[in-house]
Every structure is written in C-alpha cells, then in structure tokens.
Length: 404
Ligand code: HAM
Image (cartoon, rainbow, N blue to C red; front, side, top):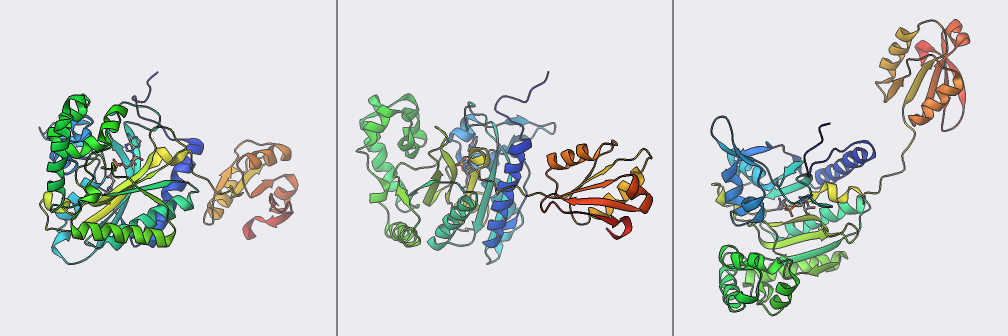
C-alpha cells in the first residue's frame, strides 16, 4: 500500500466540507473588504524566498522543498504565499501606478518541518495582501477582517500584537539587543547563539524556558520605537480598544519571516495544543523594493486552515436536492436522466439506478439528506407522473413528469 508522505494529509468527507465552508466564508468576507482573487504558482525560483522570507529564517534555512529542475533552475515549492503575490505584483508592474491593490488567495504551502499535531509539511493557507496603503488604519482594517472571519466561523481567539519598528529605529535597537545578548551568550542555547549573529531579533522568540528567563530583562523594541512607529502603534491600540477587540501586547512576537516592519500580529487559540497560532501577519513596507519593485507599503495576513478545521462551527445542515428512483420492472432510466438534467438547472439531483421498494428509496433519500424523494411506480408510469415527497414538510403529491 502506498501512503501519503509524512506530514501530508488527505482532506475528505466531513473535513473537506468544513474546508470548503471555511474557504467560502473567508472569501465572502475578503470580497466585502474589496479584495480580488489571485492565484500564483506553487513552484517559484528559490531566490524569491531567500530574498523575502530571509536566508537566516528557519523556513528558508531548514524547511524548503528545494530542487534543481530539468532546466537546471534552482526552484522550490512555496513555503508561504506573500512572496509569490509580491513577485506577481511587481512582474505585472502594478507598483508603477498610484493605486491600491488588494488580493486574497488560498492553497497549499510546503515546509519540511518535523510533523506533529498542527504542524504539517503540506498545509493550506487563506491569505490577504494589501498594497499601496501606508496608513495604520489599513493594519486595523486587516485585523477587523480577520476578526470577522473568525467570528463567522465561530472560533474563539486571543490577538497578540507587537511593533517591529522601521529602518530608523530597528537598527539602533538591534545593536542594543546584540550587546545585551553577547553579555549572556554563555548561558543561551545553541540556536540563540547562532542567531545573535544571523538574526538577533529571533532570539526573543526562543522556545527554551531558560533562555526566556534570561531574556526577561532584555531591551524591548516597544520602548525604543521612533516617533512615527510609536504613534502608529498607539493609534492601532486605540482603534482596537474602541472597537472592543481584546488584545495582548507581546514584545516577543517577532514572527518567523524576515520581511516585517511596524505592526505584527498573531491570532492564537487555546484549544488546539502547542501549535496554537491560527493566523499571522503584519506590515511589510520594504518587500516590494527588495523584490525589485518601486517602494510600496503593504500589509497582510494568512490563516492556517488545518489548524482551525476542528474549531469551525458549521451551520446546521439543511435538507437539499432531489433523490430520484424507480420501483418498476421496465427500464425507465432514460426518463430519470431527462428529469435529472432538467432539475439540475436548479440544484442537486442524484439518481438511484437500482429498482427498489418505496421504503428503501425513502431511506436512500434520507441518507443523502435530500429535500425531496421522487419515485416512479407502476401507477405513475401508467399516468406519466412522478410521486414526490417533501421530506421536510412530509407532504407528498403526484405531478405530470413534463410539468415537474
Ligand atoms: P506564518 O505565520 O508563517 O505567516 O503562517 C501563517 C499561518 O499558517 C500560521 O499562523 C499557521 O496557522 C499556519 N501554518 C504555518 N506553518 C504551518 C505548518 N507547518 N502546518 C500547519 N499550519 C501552519 C505567513 O506565512 C505569512 N505569509 C503571513 C502573511 C501574509 N504576512 C503578511 N501577509
């Protein structure tokens, strides 16, 4: 027997119904906020992610599905969606015109991680990216949209926010942090030691308890923001306060991708175990430039679909569609197919090919959760009619086949 690869999952039956419902719900809300669909390739040049997500990140350093293709191109399966959307944005020269563009997308992402509950090697994201709007109101608007999506899906969450500063305040802070970290170097774990040189900010989000206890007294960026970053962060907090969205300021929230500046946020669930982040995002004002576009502010987020599937509250399923069957000896399949084709203009129709008793047909209709059970018996065949029972109101009637 051949199984799916480790860390990769089939999504079927009730899970696939939830999957589709989740994507449809998120899509509907994204459209209400003015987002348009974008689809980018699963395979991209490796250097796209090196330049955007960052060479020092775990995603690029350790987790890429990377290979040389038959044309000798260094390519990899996308580990996330933002870089591809930015590449598409620059490639289509959308950065050259003074307009705002907003895109939503969903699909599989690939990271060669150590699989565990909530951490897959192939997983799905629903994401949104907004280009051309530098105002912190857009950051707030994006958080509102995420709130709307989680509310619509019936999912409880905690929102964590932080500010990662900008090219004015971040480098000064980074230097202070490196000085602090170098002084406690001996006591920090191996990963932290490596990161002091490659990506010191990420030391802050080390999962090691001992490291975390040492970091309690580290300088905090939030106390060292420049005027513009500070005032934006204050505005964001005010807006969240006045809209009643609860949040926590988490000074260690640094995100695992290098492209962020200013607002960073994560939605976390307490109901799904250790891998608790159900969505993450933030502002990335420099990324369009890094990828050879004209300087364009941008902000976005992505939701991890597999992480929320167990939490999604589906609406009560309603009886829907028509079950069609025959009780007669004669072959009347052509009639059933004709009825089915006509009725499919309106909705779902399924035909039972085997001749069965009325009781068995009603059972079949119930199993399909059909609204109507329609059957042709001897009497109906003689009179050119079909017997139709509404399984919700329990009323039944006979109707002329051509008129139904
Ligand atoms: P991210 O935080 O790496 O951000 O991923 C977003 C979400 O994807 C996570 O919060 C999590 O729910 C889910 N996720 C990540 N890795 C896995 C995994 N191995 N298995 C299952 N689920 C996972 C990004 O990817 C950014 N592109 C988000 C963004 C968009 N920022 C700006 N625009």
